Image 1 (cartoon, one colour):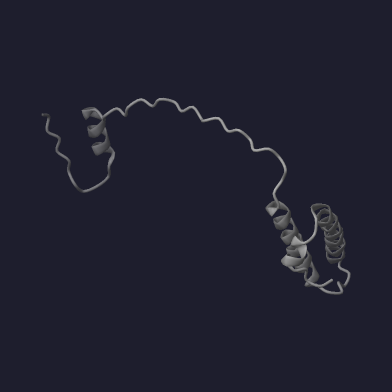
Image 2 (cartoon, one colour):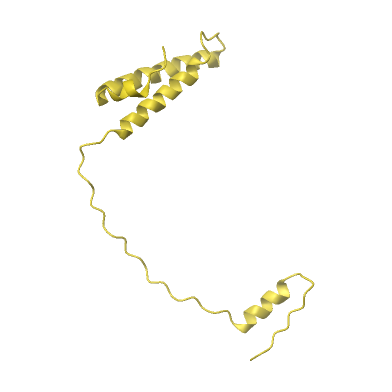
Length: 110
């Protein structure tokens, strides 16, 4: 099987793409089974080629527009956040005492 170009795949309908995708997945299962059992594979590069073709088909299927109606999205209600509390003087002292450094911190009360 030769490489299938994306422009050729875009010409196919969604049903034809689905059928081709099913065939390629079955083929990939067969090739992977041959590899795992240890039998000689005719073309080892075929695994990579089939996987990439499957990815191309899935990409093209997702590109095609669907006939579904657009979904109405309601605005998200956000919570009102409380303002941040300022650090008290004792918290700063505890932080300064827990820091292991050579500098000495001097706290002056206002």
